[in-house]
Image (cartoon, rainbow, N blue to C red; front, side, top):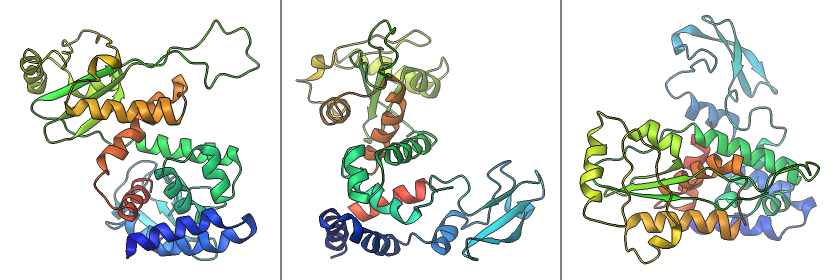
Length: 300
């Protein structure tokens, strides 16, 4: 019943004309618990911490309110800065906070920037800024801890001009995006990111996980080893098309998203959409409302 109501809200928003959307969008935000009081309880359930110097809550004092006494303001005795309930969240400074839940819901459905803008009633420029703020926040989330035998795939996107300004006609050619590393262990914990992130997080001379990788790669040609402290090799995506392993499905999901649905990703956005793929993978088993709820909490 709850899932039907979630879908009814989004479908109702899709079918309404622009002048009648705002009321339904506000009802959807209220149904999701997206208001100042509930957001404050979820963000500061252990007491407010300073977003500037990370001071504990015993160094924070209340410092008035704002936005019609709905949003609290705080003062940090350690760094002498003030902040409020929205500081550090993606909707900080937004003039349309009630539209964020609906926007996130359409984003989780895989709609494009322009489609999300049209459904929610904002401009494509605002939609682009919101999406980048969301993806940048997801990049700050810690990656999964991979353990035991791990399957690794390296995907090299094709060079692209996407994201380049049309005015810069003196560019030498398409930009080569960074190599994307996809890894998954037997617990189905997954990692999607760049080589630098992967090597920094998981590969070191004293890492027992790396030694287990080398042993597991010797028995499978589809699992490509990454030598310790050496740059990784690139392999074609087609080499894994007939491989019935878990990393193949992870790679296929990323390629379908970036190549087929989005028709390519700009080189400077590869890290952002790798973080988005990590989030989608980690919440794949949740119901739509629970998935959106977890995303709202992650973006606070």
